[in-house]
Image 1 (cartoon, rainbow, N blue to C red):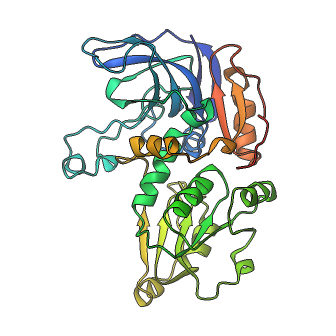
Image 2: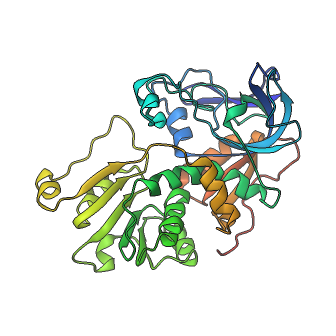
Image 3: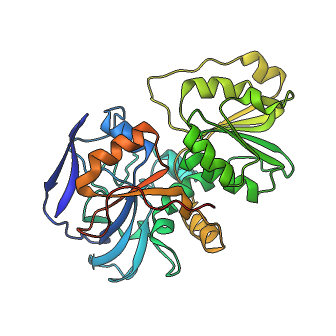
Amino acid sequence: MRAVVVTEPGRTALTEVPDPRPEPAEVVVRVSSCGLCGTDMHILGGELPAVPYPLVPGHELTGEVVAVGEGVTSPAVGDRVAVDPNMPCGACHYCRIGRANLCEDYQAIGVTQAGGFAELVAVPARCCHLVPESFSEAAAGLIEPLSCAVHGLNRLPRRPGEHYLIYGAGTMGLMMAALVRTAGAASVSVVDLNEDRLAFAESFGLDAAVTGADQLGRKPGFEVVIDATGAVPAIEDGLGRVRKGGTFLQFGVTDPARSAKFSPYLVYHHEIDVIGSMAVHNSFQPAIDVLEAGLDLDPLVSDVYGLEDFDEAVARFRAGTGRKIHIAPQPGSRTAGPRPARKG
């Protein structure tokens, strides 16, 4: 089969690799779609110490089960599934206290073992969630990132009538915006330096989409500020925009080598809660349920590329053009490039 392999940091190759065979308790999924993510950029850049090179990346995957291993009763061959890439050990301190996303022996599909930028991938059957027949391909491919946003929402106090400020009008920022709106936010504003993203954000039902928080005029600040960029300047600015008694959520993934400056006095004096949200935690099925209930995120998928166009897709991602980019690994299943835009 064909797969994109990161041979070493900074180098990728589209190559032929052996078809996977399911081990006991595993299934093989024919990948129909796999999303590009900021984590993939960190893998390509050699910034994550746990990554074993060479690696087939890709952790936002969906597809059809084509083979099952010994002992697997569900899913079955022919089932359409989305794959939770996280594989906690179940035995460490954090797994035992119900914080499996903080597992001390963290393993993940597309991060520490072969992932979804391939025609086929072997995954644990327990990681597979059935995708409703009504879901579009775009929606199915958005389940994994939405599950991260659902976990982020679960980390917040979610008091109705509060004002939210989100840094980053990319896919994750707009997913968070859609979720907090359903949770009763009084207003949701977004800050981004990318004018194209801001234009789309305005069509996505936000109260304001601006290049700088000063343009919003909320002198007391915001009850909830969310960073969905991982950019240190955005984080530093956002920490200073939290209203007294408010919450700052670090949701974006930052280069592990970077640090941000903040005022410990303000955290103390204003009783600001600073919290983090990492990956998925009991939020995969809720993400599916939210989509099935009618949350329309299809417009977030702006581009679909084939495996042979992987480097072009990465360049587009890094340039910040478009929104969510999906890779469709099956030969002839997609035409490379942007898909038609549709307002949400």
